[in-house]
Image 1 (cartoon, rainbow, N blue to C red):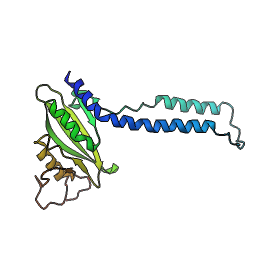
Image 2 (image 1 turned 180 degrees about the vertical axis):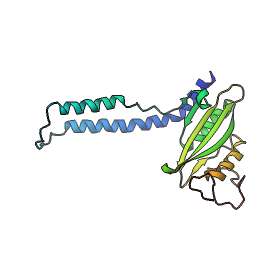
Image 3 (image 1 turned 135 degrees about the vertical axis):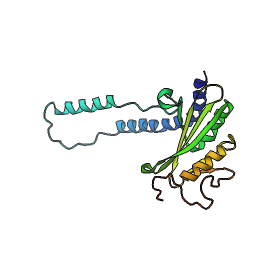
Image 4 (image 1 turned 90 degrees about the vertical axis):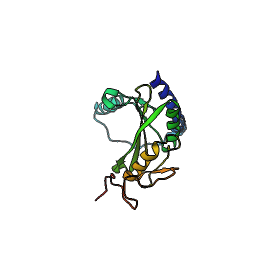
Length: 204
């Protein structure tokens, strides 16, 4: 099945993320072992806790921990096409975008659009890429976030020629610089434009 094949191929771009996640876990284990081996420090007497109150607090904490949703592992997420309009949602680091585009290109996907989102409260800009397949309906969305004060994402115009204009338009409206683009000149704005009208703090 095409969707499963693409999901597996894109999952390979997350391997270094999985390796990095193991480092803090190992560090926590070392810290826990060191704490257990350390001599028990003299503790000062604490105020007496009313009988039953301590056990209730522990019970509340345990219940909250049990109810907390487990963090989803990194990787492509399948979605409900009828609700979302796409089958696969993929969030990657900026440097992974060309590799993802190359995977989709080799599997006969075409690019529909590139746009941006201004996450002004988080001081980030997001580039959003929409892909579809020539022979079978299989829409894939790839997202990446970058620093709002220095927004930069590698170009994919050397993989998809059609991305050339999409990237220029996104640069026009959001100011995202697509590094490696052969001609990142204004496409829809005046040649001397020094503003990006779809940023949330833009004032006409």
